[in-house]
Image 1 (tube, rainbow, N blue to C red):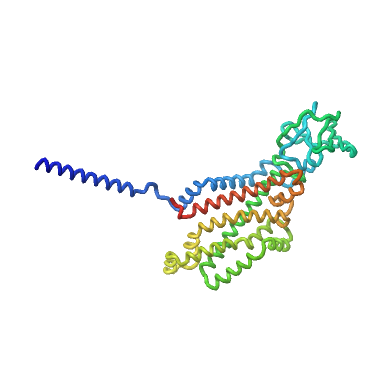
Image 2: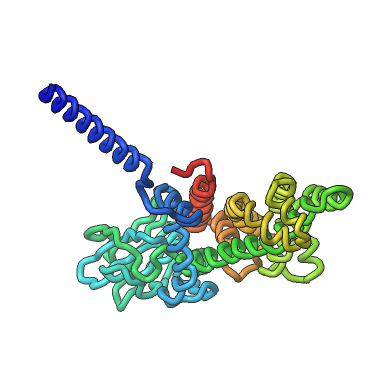
Length: 398
């Protein structure tokens, strides 16, 4: 019996010990595996985990920095004209002649440009004569004659003896990294200024959405009834009139087609989409328990909107604003392209694209810079908008 009692006690002790281990395991399983984080910490963590969103944010930061500091790096003005250096591409096909320290490049206008071996533009070589019968023009550089045979396609540079040059070199344009336009203006500097205009339009669109669209839509959705009906009909009327007509009317009133007309046109009509989004959020939130509790304790409507409805609708507001920004940039570029936006000589991506159409066949690089910049800005904002949409969705919280 003693031995039996001893074995029974051992089994009971083992049973108790096993239950103690299970209890400890259960406590460890219920423990939180990570420290608590706020909502915005979760948003940031989910946003940086999306590579395309981070890539878009980096692109926007780089474009903003170049738009602000780029012109000071190039040291050139967006409206300075060098007619003797018009239509010079970023990459030059320069011809080398024996006994000449520098090389020579022929631009699409059949002008001969003297170029150093490291890609610096020296000058436009003076033309001495032009024989229309043989289609040969003679240029003189430092006492040495150079002939241009433009009867061939492409034109060929010949020496004084009528023989072709020794070699042809491809050199990067060291003075104008993206070349020059038809008026001899620096394409790179003008692209920086054009990006500055586009980002300024994006900033204006964001501020207008915040100041007008959010307040208008919040009041309409929260008050409801006849007030909501009247306010939304005003939105419908504004939304049915084309934006181009607004810009034309603003230009007629102001008497100018500068940046102010674009800003006023966007401020007049661009908030309607944001107002509709905020109204929908207000309609869905105003009957929630926390809003009803705020009404019960006597909170005024303005405080309810400011403290309860708009903070809970912040996710859709941010996403909608981010998605509307590329549309505003495209509208500005399109209006400038068709001639009713930013007025010359101010540099805009739309005006640059319009100017490049005249030399599209001979100098297609002039169209590449503004269109590529527009695409980068729009794609970057869309990537950031997609990332914010996913990051602000509480259902995706891990």
